[in-house]
Image 1 (cartoon, one colour):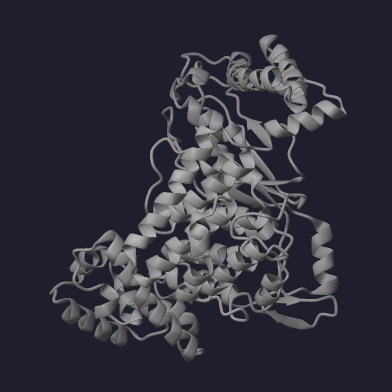
Image 2 (cartoon, rainbow, N blue to C red):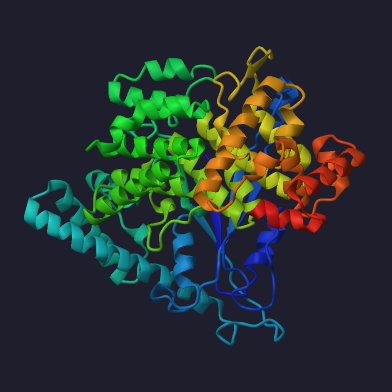
Length: 564
């Protein structure tokens, strides 16, 4: 089980300095309050002599030590529970950690600003404690009003028990005690689980993503194949094992989509786009959005995405159970992020509901959160999120794990870690493991099931890694990817830039497009050559060809054209 520790305290007490000492991820550290706004995330491996002895005895191919995540959280000031300073941001981040490292300033130095004007560590600690308690009290009172209404009007036994628990929390908080001081009996603990007070055994990722290891959840969920754990090469067999014929059809649609067979996907799921069953309808809408997008059917893709948004609004208004809302939010965020459309303002954050999703869907959602961080340029943070998810997942969920590896590669290539990016893509395509008999067995995550779609979707963001990894070794596969990339680019153009007469991939080969992507990120010809396994002169030749095809005269203008 992994542990997430949040570093908390008043602004400018040294939280980011401590974070930089503990982790390899470097946060900005400066002598002024609120230097940190968004949380910084670092991963620390845990030294274990037992692990070293096991490595000596077994000599495994890979060694994955236990890790602790350290989160550098924005500073808190008095009144944070009412929105003062960065209070709301602070409180939402700290509440999702497993433990806190509370940094208190205990020294005098006129050169280092203190937000309260003088040093008093006892007062500072009480400020943090009080603000957390006030925020908890606000949350408890809000939920109490809702549950009391249920208990009175409907005679709901569960609601009555929950009201009892909420009153215990309220009483403690009013007395200035923390919520964790409340003692609950077995029945009360069971009721409290609804509040998220007690979670399944597991670990927490950045942005509050809680990875439980318990699989006591109902398997009937959106995109059931995505959420299934199976050995690579067993996707079809897994689909055939679904007992519910409707869910099985959805799963067939998933299989077709991830195999880049968009038309077959639509044929399998389109009849469920008018279903009254939210699980079936959301699944069908998600697959229809992506498949029509790939086929260049922009109108149909947008209609399916809008239907997802309407379903979400409907269940939010009904204040539906958190599992249903989690499925709706998952569908909405995924259909938004993958085509780079921001969720509407006021949409609840997905991370608040991730603990209600099965592990497979949660892993895919983490890849989406990582993608969002990537788009913000937070490459180290995004990479830490996805790599921790993969390291801590006990079973293999091929579809979401392929996406996780792709996001990791995207982040690595933007940090110019060519070897790391190449390794991530290869592991997404085929992953090897050593069994107890020390015999290497190839576990081909994407190849065996012919999952091409993730690489097609991420081709542009992978910036040449596919060319460097499989263009020469697997030319047939690469040709299929090329065809898919061209189709995807046309669909993208129709959604995002319909006035363009031709997509970039209609003018450039995938290899030229990858070189163009790297060039517009200010990579030198030598760096591009090292990344793609080409000579500098070959890269120069390709760059000249790109300029000619795009009818531009300077390398600097490539960025402008590609961004179109």
